[in-house]
Structure formats: C-alpha cells, structure tokens
Image 1 (cartoon, rainbow, N blue to C red):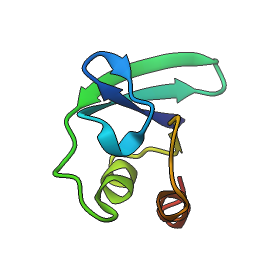
Image 2 (cartoon, helix red, strand yellow):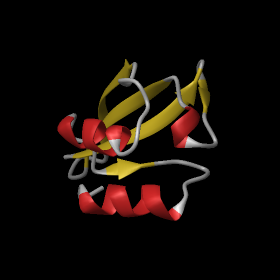
Image 3 (spheres, rainbow, N blue to C red):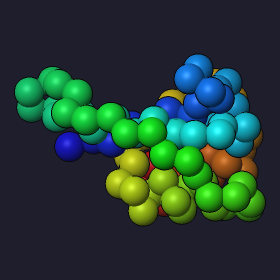
Length: 81
C-alpha cells in the first residue's frame, strides 16, 4: 500500500507544501491499481520539520508538491518519504 499526501489550499492543489492549509491523503493499492481511500486532514501548526514528521506518522510514503526547497526535500528523505 502506498499513501500519497497532496497539499491543499482550500480544495485546490497547493503549489508549495509549506503553504498548505490541509493535506489530502490517498491510499493506493498497487496490486489492484486502485485508490482505496481519501481523507483530508488539517496539519498541525507549521514549524521546522513538523510536516514531514506528521505525514510520516500518518503513513505517507509519497508527497506531491509543486515547490519544495532542499531543506524540506532532505527532511522528507530522512523520514522515508
């Protein structure tokens, strides 16, 4: 199972994950190639390293984002995302 996190502003894709006011989490069954679930969650207060840790605790393995700096990329990599 893969869990994909998508940053949102309102109901739209957020070009920058740090500016997201919510995240949609999609559960993907690789074997069946289906989306098995979607939930939208409000993240904790944004701070250094908070989003990568929070998303990993929720089971995220992939983050789709239009913009991410090298520090954020490194933090996600440290959390296996």
